[in-house]
Length: 224
Image (cartoon, rainbow, N blue to C red; front, side):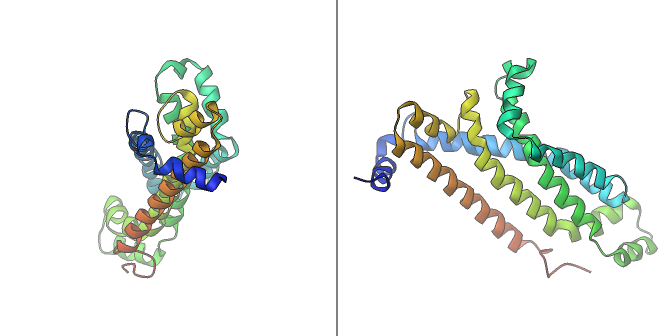
């Protein structure tokens, strides 16, 4: 029996889907962790990108600083955080590591989207008497939405794939299926866990692609 059929047998076994360590529970934990990290990342990155993009100052520096995090492996950041005083703060070392990983694509895409808004449209809005905040919220933000959504999609998919490291810090998620497979020397379980993570990432990608297509300001149909 080859590894493919063994993996299929593992996935088809109802016992692996139920119980506190089953797939459904781990999937819920993975979704919760991904959602929390994505929301925190958006709360940090998007306001900074929108304001700097609106002002046209300091954005390049902020993007470059945030992109430094891409050069450092998330696992290395997690290890350092676990060895620091916050290592005892439950899931927070994992959350911080994942947030640092998700901020760069959010910040970069939102800033680029804001700076890509046609200057003539912005000047026309100001000529109509709009204040800076009104121009930002009513003109620039809608026109930058396609790239902002792209950044959110990229960050979400990356978080789904990377959130498996939570298992290394004792957290939940689909990564626990993979680490348990290693502990049991069960290659089919390891492969099954990897397949579940990949399928979950593809599902998230599809959901955000649909959201982008449904956006009234998607590429090619922007207001102007």
